[in-house]
Amino acid sequence: MKLKWLGHSAFELTSNRGLNILIDPFIQANPVCPLKISDLHPDIICITHGHADHFGDVIEISRNNTNLIVITNYEISIYLQRKGVNAIGINYGASVKFEDVEIRMLEARHSSTFDFEIDTKYAGNPGSFLLTFDNNLKVFHAGDTGLFSDMKFVIGEIYKPDIAILPIGNIFTMDIKEASIAASWIKPKFVIPMHYNTFPSIAQNPEEFEKLVPNSKTLIPNVMESIEF
Image 1 (tube, rainbow, N blue to C red):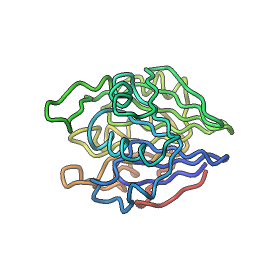
Image 2: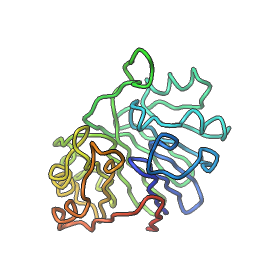
Image 3: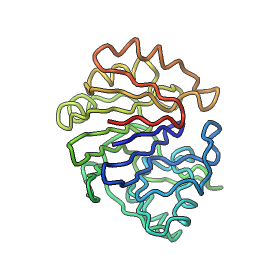
């Protein structure tokens, strides 16, 4: 499996069979992402919640990739279906399987609205995703979230991800200290910080996060850097 950080909370994961998955594709308005919509050719997009910096360019990307499937919560899936997007709505604990990847939606503690609409509307419960690849490698993308105990008792003890991607930016999500606690509860082999340094309001030093996570290896990729697992 190859993982590439596109900045903010946007990640591109490619399975061993070549299945391409985008998570939270915030591209055009992302000041640190150099890509164009036309550069992306995903098979699947996962959307954690409705905020513009996570919902991102899913509709535009879908128009350029007619066989694309979007996995998200039920409310966002209905919104997307009305826009002509092939979207599947699932909820906490449910999973779908595509080729060599199982995608499961888990909980997150946050808000979720279509904040890019003139009249801000409810966009269902925010979520996180656990992706399990055919070699049983498990990647947990936490979405936007605060710290909550099921990170220890459900995500850590039941699902046991190998890689945890956690927000550290504060203001809208966990800060560095809380994210380090989450990492200690989940106990992944590798932890990757996200949702920081995109804007001045979420400026953080990921090396400070690394110092607080002694029991997992912290990986701090540059934007557009690929890591192979």
